[in-house]
Amino acid sequence: MIDRAGLAAFLRRRRAALQPEDVGLARGRRRRIAGLRREEVAALCRLSADYYSRLEQGRGPFPSERLIASIAQGMHLSLDERDHLFRLAGHRPPAKDATSYHISPGLLRIFDRLTDSPSEIVNELGETLRQTPLGIALTGDNTRYAGPARSAFYRWFTDPAERALYHPGDHDHQSRVFAAAIRKAVTLRGPESRAAQLADLLLARSREFPALWREPTVDLDLIGDKRFAHPELGALELSCHTLHDPEQEHTLVVYTAVPGSESYNKLQLLSVIAPF
Image (tube, rainbow, N blue to C red; front, side):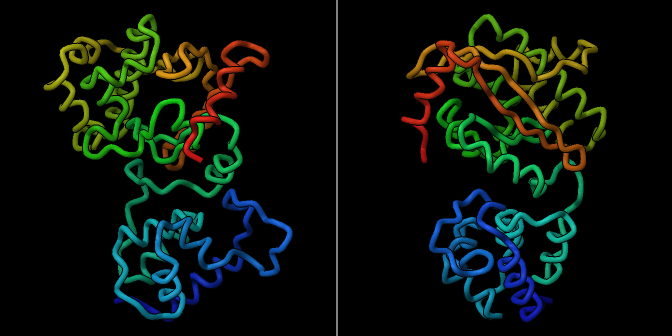
């Protein structure tokens, strides 16, 4: 059963405790209130300001699990805080495992500061959870997919358009990296996991994947130099850097270029086509 008074009080306290810089917003000179405004939190949680206001006032409709998950992520809650929010809303908290899409506050704080780099947060199945505007400008909006196609691993082996973004000379290596990542996830999660389901799908739908699946490699990494074939900017050579969150098995991926290089200059042009 929903605890409307408790939910409203929790949301008000969390909003008052959040500062603009905590969630990637500019403070501005005219800010006179402690914490964030309701409309700012609503935008972060992808809700209407009216709907969020009613929740803080202890009224309004019964919020769904999906809506509560959006609020938990938008307010940068920890896993324990997220679980508390779910209980206040009358829902059972999601499992704390690698299937969770909830990003830790620490990783989000780092991500929110990467405004000048193409960056994304992905889980162990290659599903993109967040992208910076420059990240979208580099590879497209990878959060728009649904079903198995949410996984970049799945798209790589089933959709030729996914490979068009990368230099043809790197395709074989990338295939082995992705196959190794899936094998590692299946080993960790077991035969009933989403990772195992993904492997089964690719064994049935990809001509290339079965041969790679029989290889024993599990330790290939995503880091290193990446050669992109951007549809507007042409060839880019970027360095790939990662930061791993072991609790949620999420990885922050950041792309950079050598200052003064041709790719560095092209990277600056991404801001022109980025969806700011």
